[in-house]
Each structure stands twice: as C-alpha cells, then as structure tokens.
Length: 76
Image (cartoon, rainbow, N blue to C red; front, side, top):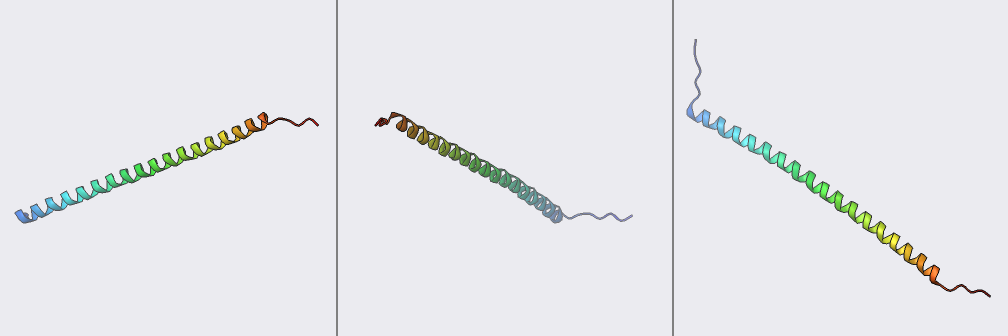
C-alpha cells in the first residue's frame, strides 16, 4: 500500500491557510458584535430622545394650563 506524505511546505501552507481562515471568522464575529452594539446604542439613545421630547411637551402643556388657571377671569 502506497502512503502519500505531505511535504513540509504543504504542511506549512495548510497551517497558514487554517490560521487565516480562523482569523477571518473571528474578525467577522467581532464585526457582528460591534455592529449590533452600535445598533443597540443608537436605539437606546433614540428611545431616550423620544422620552425627553414627550417630557418637554408634557411640561409645556402643564405650564400653559397653569398660566390659564392664573389668568384673572373677567366677570362683567
């Protein structure tokens, strides 16, 4: 039975190829994590801004109601 042996060069090539593939997969995984993190942070900031706008509008309405209550009523 004939046994095929790999040369040192082919073994090195396979090792380098495997290392590059693993590194590429890791970069892809980290990129996905960072992309999702940026998306989540943007969503959280957007939600905060929406809440702040709603609070501002509620404060404005309350101030208008207060001014309306404080205005003297003409009783002619």
